[in-house]
Image (cartoon, rainbow, N blue to C red; front, side, top):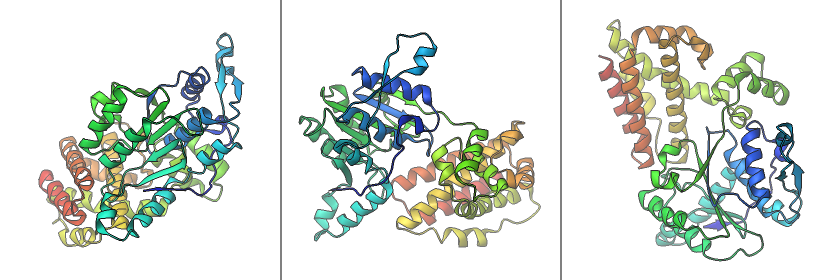
Length: 397
């Protein structure tokens, strides 16, 4: 289902985009020279700005005014002053593309519109797509499995064979790398021989999720993490309402992603982390033999992770929290405590680290990957988490 979009704001210029200035200048130079790759992977952690950058690049390609700036970075290196593509932000093409900035809200509207269709067959056959501009199509993971599906990719392939309607190029933005096998294989067909007027941009937290044959046919630009100190300064400037100790904690938990830091919900994170700690405490108790694991409290907690969109978000938050805690245990075991993210839990993390071995953490990480894979197949969440609890307790013994 393709729906129109309500207006929302993006950074006014590329200079307002936080971090990764060199990578962005290379992309802007490629657009100005007409050499932007037809197939591009933007890789980086959640909150690094991949989606925002994809929209800004789309605006630079499609802008009616095609403004250019002098490449100051190249001048500093003694180049001949190549130009950088930019966007005006006010033309008809720019404003329509910029209206897609709040993707989450628009996907919710599309899902709600699909649910209102009269027949089950229509709902089943309708895929979620977002189209802010006739020549720009955004393809998000389709709920509830949150995978990019075959029907979505078929739409991309079909529309890619038509010439642009109102802009110089057709642009397709796939907002995640997790795809159904059939969808990935179909995407490969259009990547092998992309039409001259088409750009396909794939956003990936982990490019390894993509087929090697897809990666080999795409140029990859990685958005690196910002230093903790820079994130903390950003929070001080833009979120002065957050107390200093919480700013320090958020700066570490954001994993170098400015967007994630600015929108970080610390209260929600600490709630999911409290549940994640139950897994670790039970495993530590089983490993040390000093106390019996509290299975009753653990299973009572997992029972709250039920079906539906809310349960899915809650489970994802729990798994992210558990993953960060496991990483902190690895950092302590490796003798690099200065890199620990959950700094407010340092005493408890020290105790857990002394009980849970590297082999256990490795086994726990594999079990965590299995649960995340099960979520993509829409398995029952509470049962998956119960199985995870059992695996962690067993591997600790």
